[in-house]
Amino acid sequence: MPQINILIADDIFSNLFLVKSIIENAGYYCKAVTNGKKLIEELKKEKYDIIFTDIEMPVMNGIETVRYIRTKLKHPYCNIPVIAITARNKYDFSGKITNAGFSDIISKPYSIEKFKTVLDKYVKKL
Image (cartoon, rainbow, N blue to C red):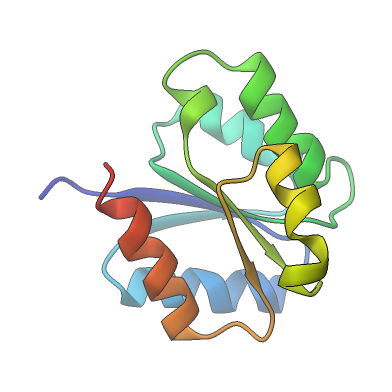
């Protein structure tokens, strides 16, 4: 199986550390950045298979980031799975997430099971 590269963005260090640890412990390579602008810059430099991004970040938030990916980047990057990670209630916010172009959402409290389920779902499609 080829290496799966995952990129995550969150402005809160403890969240970045937690999500990065979960993903790496699941056996995937993971790079972390602190905002959407840095995520876009990194995506232009390296190939990533899945993106996890917080919704509320300074500089460029998650919604702005996914819209940029979907409208400004060329294939295959415009189709990369982008999963929202947020403290907001998944059910109250899911319409806005889908309309923005996110592939999925993981809401707090974060758990290994939530990430494993989402990772399994999107890794199978690669």
